[in-house]
Length: 135
Image (cartoon, rainbow, N blue to C red; front, side, top):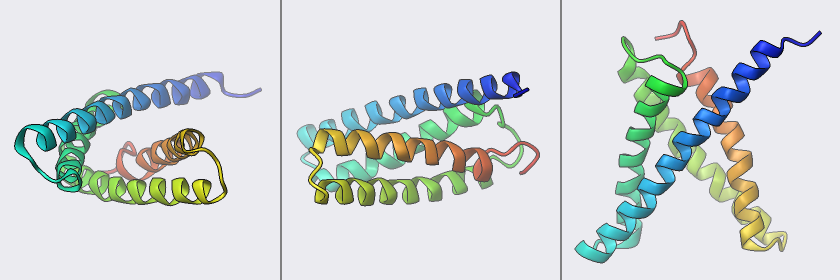
């Protein structure tokens, strides 16, 4: 018989993790638009700054809420999380471009890339960044 408690816990963590992703997306969007519109920052620079800011906030969200690992070793987890964020960004772009090259409409390609990478991000974050017992 499957371990329903463990499955439920994993699904709950994924949903909570997704909530952090939504928070990050909102921060990226607002900061990018404000920096570009009000300060005249080039869009790519504005997006880069917003991603550092949002990834840092999302790290705190995951460290305290999703995985409840806050405390000792946070700097090591933060560095790992930021490195993972760079990999996840690159992976999302590659998948998106491949799906667009396969002639999928952008709205479908983007949705697929986001969902697939979100699952990979959750798995990688769970195993590499926030694994309990590791500092």
